Length: 147
Ligand SMILES: [Zn+2]
Ligand SMILES: [Zn+2]
Image 1 (tube, rainbow, N blue to C red):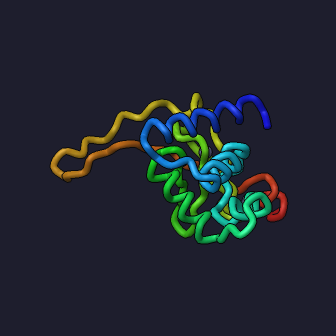
Image 2 (cartoon, rainbow, N blue to C red):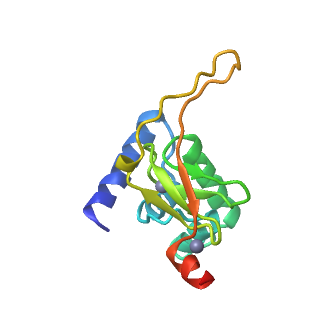
Image 3 (cartoon, rainbow, N blue to C red):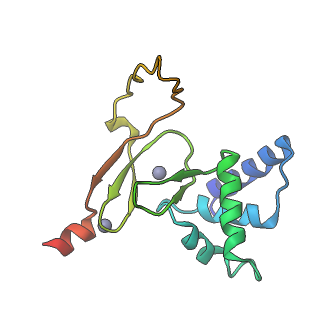
């Protein structure tokens, strides 16, 4: 495991303890598996990644653990209309390239997207808490396949 990953997992455990959230083997393993990748896996892909390390683990448990991590703010859920939910270990605001053919999700360097001024939501009762930008299109592999 890389130094950065070890540090991230240690930070996760410390934050859980600080908040009185139990650090179960499942939670730690799922968080670690997710933090190790940048491809925004689906819940099923996370399950495939951890099942060998946690014998007897059910798919449902992985789904539940992911929801817990999302609710606690350790992980971000990224979902596009018609697409299956994907999970992102980066919780700071960042933007994505989204392939409309295969659903691939790639992080975009924040610097290319200027900070947006939040729209005036007065009168609608809507309280804006965050935003992210999705650039839709075709990934390299899908664009090649279409040619
Ligand atoms: Zn694609
Ligand atoms: Zn991302």
